[in-house]
Each structure stands twice: as C-alpha cells, then as structure tokens.
Amino acid sequence: MAGVGGVPKDPSRRARRNKDTIPQTVLRWERAEAPELPEFRIERDGQLVEFVWPERTREWWAMWISSPQADHFGASDWQFLLDTALIHARLWRGDLSAAGELRLRVAAFGATPADRARLRMVFAEADGADQGRGSSGGPSARERYGNLRMMPGGKSDQGKST
Image (cartoon, rainbow, N blue to C red; front, top):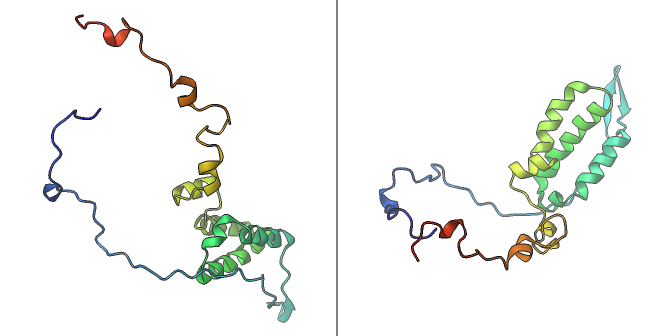
C-alpha cells in the first residue's frame, strides 16, 4: 500500500548499488542464414569415407532452422550449432557419452521450456494471444470478480467505530 514505511534512502548513500564491475560491450547485430548440413569425409580404418548424417540429426537440424530462436542467430551461433550437430549425430549413432555435452550445448540456445525461462525468452504470440484471459481461454479474474465489493460489517469493518 502506498505511503506505508519510511522514506527511501537517497540512492547515492546506498551501500549496495548492484552495478556491473565490467562495462558491457555492445556489438553490431548481423543475422545470418542457417547453413546446410555439410558433406564431408571422415577417416575410418585408414580410409576416407563419406560421412552420412543420421536421419534424426537431419530432422533436428531442420527443427533448429525453423525455430523462433533462429531469427536471433548470428554466424558464430550457427557454427557452434553445426558443431553441436556432430555431437547429436554421435549420440544417434549410439555414443551415449555425447549426451551430456549435447544437453549443455542446446541449453545455450533455449531448447527446453526451462532453458528458455533461464535465458528469459518468451514467445511473442503468447503475450497477446489470450487477451489477458490466461491459458484456459475463459474470462479473466478481473472479468469474473471485478464488480465485487466489500459488504458493510465485513471483517475489514469490524472494530471500527461508526
């Protein structure tokens, strides 16, 4: 409630100001287009053989290209994600030791709801899609209870002289 409590301390006298000790570097933003998964050769048993991307990794790559996050990826992001695709391919070829590194890398891009919450990402359509009605689509609390008023003699009126 407004007006309750003491006068706030002058900001210049506060002991804790939560200022960054290191200044922020502002970079020029440059969106980059997603690269295709490359064709290349790997050495196997002393011979060079064509690397074949697992179908699951191709699907995973297409998912990232069409994700909302992709609108905010620069060239270095796509290169990091391309390296991550190799780890994804290792996992889907049966190398379960790749799972931990894959989880850490995709978390940096907001792969799960928890990752997006930690990165403070929200979907723009979600803000206006329900017109403030919440996820149920029903009337908001303000619409349901906005006309309610306290009755005389209610708990807040007890003990007051009339």
